[in-house]
Image (cartoon, rainbow, N blue to C red; front, side, top):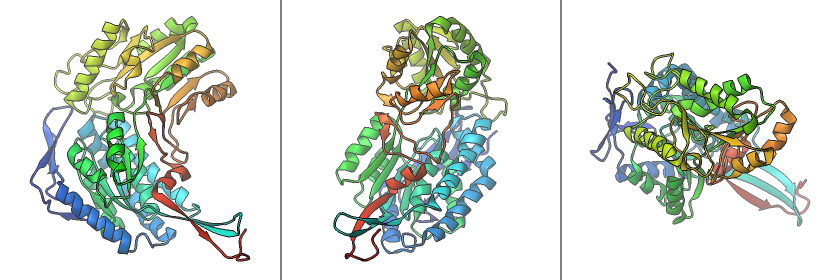
Length: 486
């Protein structure tokens, strides 16, 4: 039986502090449906206290005025500690959201460490100041920290997404209030310990687990200068609406319905081996998942049979079992959502090729079989709406022009891939897909390049030098003629 993890305090301004409210968040195991943790639910008063601490730290403290090298030294210690504690972090996340432990080690924990490491790589050569020749004389261009950041992160990859926001924010000199999801607050306490031990100055980081109501209060707080949000499109629109009242800057990383396009010359075995983990990763709970697989009609039956066999062979079970490839969904509502879409898909005329219900022998826990629909038309709801579960669509197409049209026929534009025997042709195809990230004969997310979406998939970019820009203001200083302008 899993040991109950209880925390009675909140991490505010760098230290554990008694909450000002009395509400409690109970963390439920998606495998056992039992309570595995309790933490305080942050109140509006706690938000006020955290924002005040962050404001004081930014306006009067040493962090925003530290040299890049001084900030790098502290963040290096955070990165190193995450590496040391990565197995603990992976276990914590898997116990809360059902991610298979083997995937959590690589993506939830080591993946988060790589985000911190990549941000450090960018920071070491980032041009915070440069001189430029202007039309009327020399200019000094400065990039200065934006201020107090509210970072709101989801439950599916909590440490990875937190790192995507915290690393550039801290390295550029901002103060941060991190708002974890109520489904996955336990791992954030590990991060708080790490940050405190690394030597972040007082007030620079607070961590406030809370629900949507308190999150909205944080996002609309007049003491916040910037909001970095990852979540659903509906929630992202609300964040943008609330933040706009104070003209607070926002970056939004939202949903996806990404297409994996198989061209006629693709190798069957290599394509299936590459697409299957990209489709069903993290139990289908990934915004970048390749949830629409497009196969040429001439080879459709061949690919349908291969993908159905691969989906049926995925090992479903206890997320803490090293052999598990697909675990339970994070909450009963997510299980119900996936099962509802499976019903909708059948009503729309799609055909179940694999899965289609609860796994046999797993009556307890929020499990859904890895499910593959065939004979899917792109107008169907299962092909257009983000399910966020292990339900994948296989769509036929005629020629390449139709494949491109189907890939682009979506309100989303976050990720995508093409599978082909001709890499250069795949690159050309990728240039025409309206999506923020794209892959040719592979599936990965490189943290040294910009990540973000087109259309309803979001605003702004994370990772790489482009990701730093979200946490900086640009200042132009006019210099007198002859003063060293370039």
